[in-house]
Image (cartoon, rainbow, N blue to C red; front, side):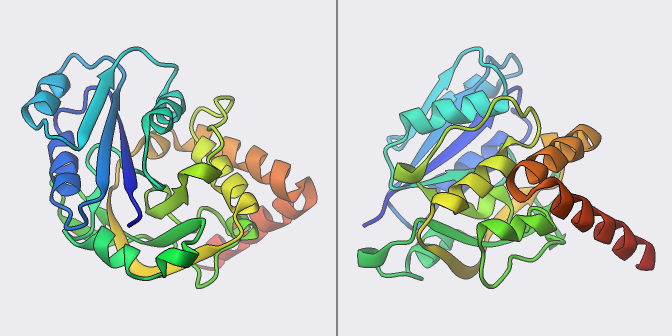
Length: 242
């Protein structure tokens, strides 16, 4: 059976972390480990983690160089076949989401990447709407020319495929990383399931302008300057028409 490593990076996340811990713990798929990488919280996060300790939960709290450095640390601790990154406040869509996802492919031909849809929730975990960008039927590394069409949380990668997040990008390294993973992947599998409840307010949302600038640089690197400029021109025209 394929094992899943869920990695959650935290810093002063006492207000939202509990539902993430509970969601991972309550999954019907038993082959899951939960790794929490904390950056030295002072708000009660560590006490909350300690109160919810169980045999499949491991955690560390120490200074880091930011979100993506902590994610790299989490992968170094991981032992599962697949990696899943859930922020504090994010949850699996239902208690059997991982079990359903794992049943959508044959273990003998397990894909390099599994992906699905994402629901957006508010601070209380209440459903708001589905993610604006719908996952494409067939995902490839060129798909991200249209933007991040699959949410990072609903993008599960084989651990053996992993390359570290590039710390040169402060806000959008997950965008670059996802493209690199798709370039390496031989098989990318659409689960055709809604996998994740995503908390609407993330670091990228709070730093939107800086994030968009980084994404443009990343797209230019992977797809070329001319193609990237043309796609962004189309984005502007489409926005005006709408």
